[in-house]
Amino acid sequence: MKPRLLCLYATMTTWAGLVCGESFSWTQLLPANNPPARVCAASAYDTATGLFALYGGNGPGLSTSFNDTWVWGGKTTAWTQLQPAS
Image (cartoon, rainbow, N blue to C red; front, top):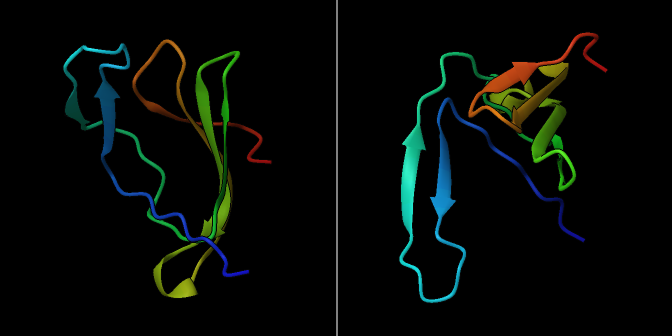
């Protein structure tokens, strides 16, 4: 099985219009606080809280290892770094 890579950048894009027959559009969000770009990170979406969680990974070129946890969403459209990181 080929490994999957997850790359994150300084912007997030959201999609609106999930109801049948409704038009949809993309909106680019530019939050002030972002996790650094990375590959090979773990992520999950919690339907109960509406949060997308991101953990760990490596920096571009695999030169940096991250041991941090970030969440996106819920009642805000921003990234929040959790403390402690793991």
